Amino acid sequence: MSAPCAVLARGALLGLGLLAARAAERPNFVLFLADDLTWHDVACFGGPTDARTPHLDRLAREGARLTRFYASGAVCAPVRQELLTGLHPVRSGAYPNHSVVRPGTRTLPDYFRAAGYRTGRFGKQHFGPDEAYPFDQAVGTLPEAHPAGPRPAIGSVDSEDDGDLDFAAIGAFFTAGPEPFVALVAPHEPHAAWTKGDRTPFPPARLQVPPYLVDTPEMRAALSAYYAEVAVLDAAVGRVLRLLEASGRAGTTLFLFCSEQGSGVPFAKWTLYDPGIRVAAIARWPGRIAPGTEIGALMQYADVLPTLLAAAGLATEVDTGCPDATGNRGFDGRSFLPALLGQTARGRDYAFAQHTTRGIIRGPEAYASRAVLDGRWKLILNLNADAEFSNGLIGGALFESWRRERGPFARSRVERYVRRPRTELYDLVTDPWELRDLAEEPGAAGVRDRLATRLAAWMVQQGDRGDATEREAERHQSRRPAPR
Image (cartoon, rainbow, N blue to C red; front, top):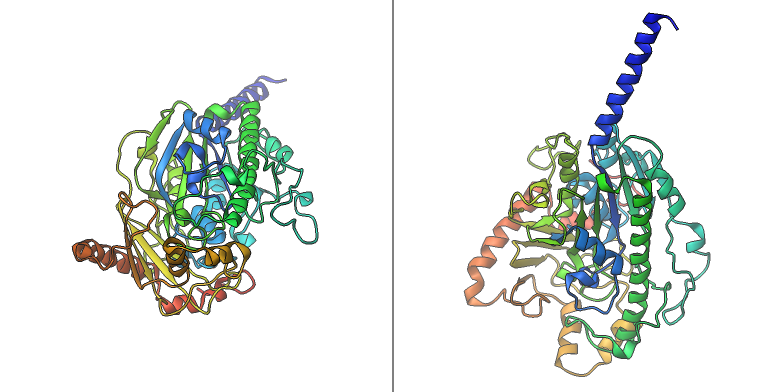
């Protein structure tokens, strides 16, 4: 080799070495999303639960529990797209279930691919359209996990307890190249109908029933089936953690687990009560996040994307491609990286949420709910309070068992689930299960009015027109083009 060629070759190798070194300095990210898991059913969050989550409990010992973390939606598609856009659901257009974001909206894979990251998603999708989410690799759930035909009823046990993730593909992605990576891992568990796992550790008669639920045999049977599938989810977390360890990249990876919205029982999924929108979030980043800690700063899903960008040293002042009603084109979310690193105890001042029943199974003509909370107080606004709330639970065996149950508590829970006042107000410190509505208490007027003012301002910023927005929700679902 001539001297000039040798110099060029050494220069090229040096350049590749510098690129590899810079890549090694940037963290990897694994985002692990459960599907319909209630926050208090991750055991390390304190319950009440009989669920067993040893791998998640270990993750919490090695990282931090984020104990005031909220979603802006109460069903899958809005929550996932809030995570991936950094935008609240009405603004992005992804506010009903099975929704799609507005044309031009930028998403997580777009930002990170432009910065030289490899991006992959594994498992359940439930966001769209595909062109708005340009992951380098997209691997769905294993087909054998969802055989054709009706799923087994509650009471039967599927012998498969490995879940439905393609673990071989996940492991290969972790080791596919020297570039830093972002992996979104999203199994189907523990979404109903709860047909997986071993139920023998969860005998219905011995289970504790959370205080916001009505204690019936059907409720206990449902919890037993659900906890068995929570165990399947936890096993999947453990397996992904082992794959990450085997790749040699666990030490440079920020691993974030989130429970999504709550499980498919009354007062959880499909509602803006805490079992519906509060999230069990755990973050581990060796050497950066203090192990075994609790971070109580107020956060929500819209904050995740700017946090990851900040952790990677990338810009968080960006054009999201989706302006809000005031013309702002930046994120709705804000980075909580300083809280993760122990530099501050402050988070956001307010978290917000919305839910539309348009497009859900057996949903009513219109039943729009909006919420705001400040860490202690939560205000819920039911825009169609003159109507009855309904969903797939109404008329089913579980909810009908509540109707048959005698006693004032059962009657009050059934009535509150289907008929709600226009305004609800709860003190989450003294009443964490939201059993005492304080909206009409004279002493609560100042708090109620303060929160109502904040909520109204957020709705204006989001372009949320209340009932009109509710009634056009189906235009934003995947089978229809989303309007600008």
